[in-house]
Length: 171
Image 1 (tube, rainbow, N blue to C red):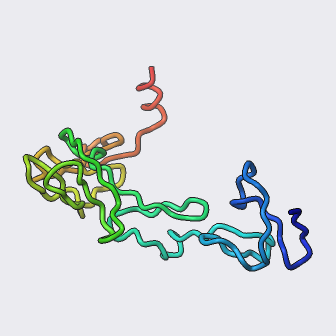
Image 2 (image 1 turned 90 degrees about the vertical axis):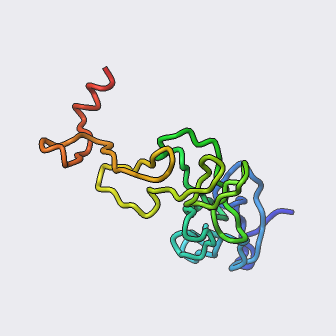
Image 3 (image 1 turned 180 degrees about the vertical axis):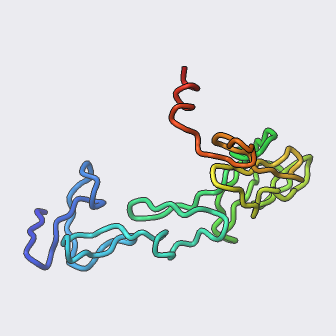
């Protein structure tokens, strides 16, 4: 069926910005879930559920908008853990939380598995300064802020890494 843009039907490329998919017809003001009608562009445009706050990612997972939907991304403990964490958090829609069920016991973030028990990630809720990152100890009992840039002259200040220092590291 050819789509004729006569004011009551609109031709769009599904899903409205990916050209390799087929053209489809739909009624004006009737867009699929995750899209809304734009009078300005006279087409369906993606709804950013993350920006609008209509997502259901809960307090721990980060909302990431993708065309037509959103995904809830759980934290990676490996990014700030001094030990060798082998688990993986996945988003669970029921309690809207991030759980690691790769072994027993099952732990919900900010808890992680250490020596067969769930322990609290010491970096959870800890705020570090600019250019710093919180690092959790192997047993999860302590955390410290580590400078990810360059230490200042008084060594209490963490500065962004300079371009000159970046060039020196690449040599």
